[in-house]
Length: 235
Image (cartoon, rainbow, N blue to C red; front, side):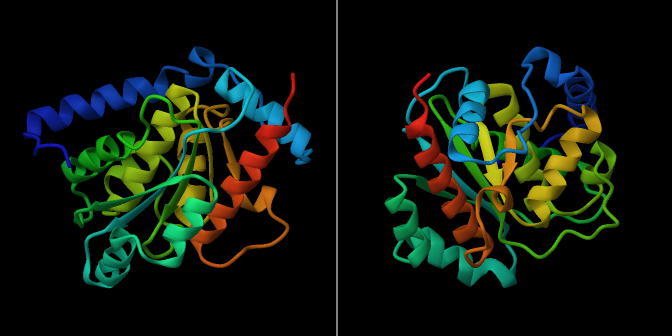
């Protein structure tokens, strides 16, 4: 996690993030919306548009975020050990599996949420082709508004980190898929800032005929679909 911020630094970073979100992301990197046609060929064309190039997906990443609370400790430990079924599934789709553990934040702690957002943005690194996103935590309450203020006061550091990753992916032209209420929140959070800001994101439910299980395995399956679709694109 980034170093602790002073109150002055927190205020400055909130202002910078507000400016970024208000800067019309869709104009800096214009992208068309996801097509209603979810055939492999249509998905491949969408991927090529988002990435700015066609071709195989050689560096996919499955990024899961979880708060370092008692509820998640066993789950996080198993995933970080790397000998579980999910790790083997990630290997089958040639994806690296990254588990991001973020400190628990108190409701209203803007500094902690800013740090979580910044931490989540580090999930997007040069050379990344596609990013699968999911949270290991409980459902996101509908009372959390999909605005910057709502996120900063939510007390959900896992949500802040996931939103940071989605934002960084938009700036870097990395395609994103995911499932779950945290993923849906990130989509709405970006769209609240700019209606076209989430055009690089496609829900796993649009790619799969049915859910394959928990959040992580569903996202991994969606990434496998994206990978096979990209291989079909010949333009």
